[in-house]
Image (cartoon, rainbow, N blue to C red; front, side):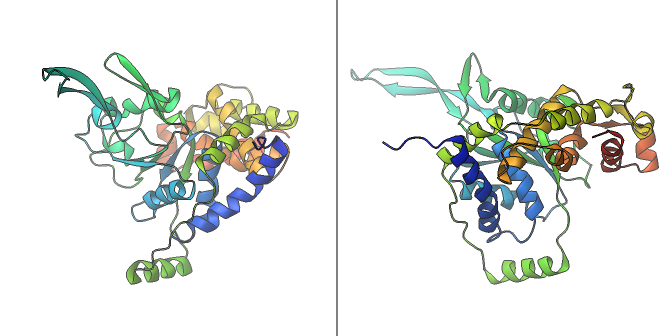
Length: 334
């Protein structure tokens, strides 16, 4: 039997997997390389990601292509106002079966819902009422669901990639802060460049749909996910991550004036944890043996932007969360 790879070998594998995944996905999706990088960081960190962008930017295609490249099962849930929790988690059903003597017996059987996949796309997650949104909370946090009196474990790996349309607000429900905080990253997807959009138009109208090759196996994914917590982080990077998180809180003495003026609530301790973990994943994907301040600084915006609760004044003045976070990074000493 082959011995399992050591951390050095896994780190070398991680350093090559990002480029290979990007090349594989770009056979089907044009551009969006930065988005792919962040999705891979979320994947290796065992974190969930919220993809924000207008319709038609290939959010669904990105997630399904990632699952295909990693040989992971893919499930999609289209969130609508009439969606029920059982439509996500599954339900117990009563079935009649004939035994060996020919007698008909009834038994309860659990039919798993679409959440029982490795990668789950929660499409337009803010279009369903809070009761149904809450069905994701236990799954995202504990990686298991409870139906009736029974608890069912979800596949390993299990991660949720949710999408949200930032423009259309009619018929939508705000995502509770408790649910937002469970997303490791909020990834904003922008319009493609002119050349990229020209290539999109060419491919999609000529039937040139690329095939996504398998890059690594699901067992390799789990091995890399287990590696990330073992990646060291420098003391300076750890202190910087905690300082950034604390500086987002308007009542903290280190908060810059922009935070005190425009933020109602800042990030909690889960923000510090997410910064460190995502920085470790970014360092591993660069082939570095430890995460440093640059890794933390590069990941602050996608990790923190959905953890800030802006004031009404910020909305009225058009203050953006990304500008506030840049002010925080500038204010925190390194």
